[in-house]
Image (tube, rainbow, N blue to C red; front, side):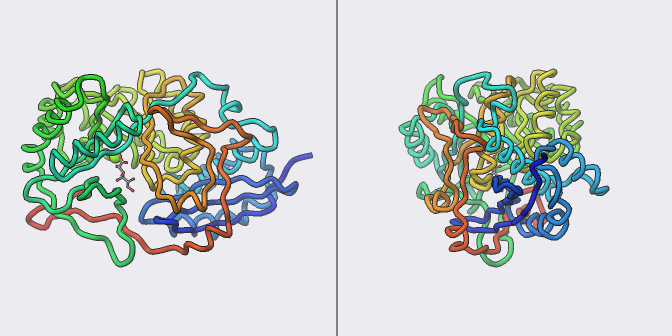
Length: 405
Ligand code: CS2
Ligand code: MG
């Protein structure tokens, strides 16, 4: 007797920041949770789910995860894109959660079982100047992190991606009102970055894994110049050196440097990365299960990437909810070509809504072992935090030209 989908509900909640969560309930009362959070465009995905998918899902066989994925992807006619793939991901994660709960096993066991005991993770250190950045790095080292991303201020600019002042936590989406605008100057950044990152490496010694995110801002020539200037810093990876739409442009950067390259957090299907993988233009693929169509699509992409020795380096900022964070950990625990997982941590308010069993200790993440994905959502608590319109910033060059943020 098939277990069928009886209820599909979308929760939009904002405990310190917005999250969109899908709740699927089966006819025998099993509840599965999926994440549909797309930072700055949350309501678009919520509408896609509640206005276009919910009614088509009710009555479907909840065990048919792959069939449902194909039904939502190929059956939509209009394919791919962050909104569509986040909506499909939410359904996919919820169905994997249901299957694990119904069978009494954690989802990683359904994916072939663990291939490792723990998952190396990295977190964010931020500082406007070198002393502040080094303080932030030290605080993260004291928490046990073995890998740390360093982001820093740029002389002459008053706002920079990933950087706060006074050690405050960084949340990119500004709440209320429209998108904030930030001025960016690549030449100032290129002059400054090598000095700061060399100072960090000098301070921490050779062991600590250091990462840096260029956040889509450079052209291939600038990216090659930056990478070459960082060769001696021994980065674990240099992230998003160029906007990723034109994958072929990375060939020039790859040919100029041996610094490991990571790209993909804005990707949402295998077609965004196929050339980067088959030409091995990247070392790490940054796609998150919530933005990459869920576990069902991501596990195929990572199996494909394994053939080219490209490893998973999943996106894991504050805007990837604990539901997809947990799903990603289950997937990565069962994935051989895993490299490192981003883990920014969450505001304490998030824990009032999402009760998750994954843990970070001594620089490694571990998912829980209870059936399903290991996250419970407190709907009453979620209702206490209504949606607050929030936008990611828009960047402009000094002359006013819009720039990749
Ligand atoms: C960043 C993110 O974590 C990262 O690597 O690129 O902070 C990104 O800016 C946000 O997830 C956008 O919502
Ligand atoms: Mg990034």
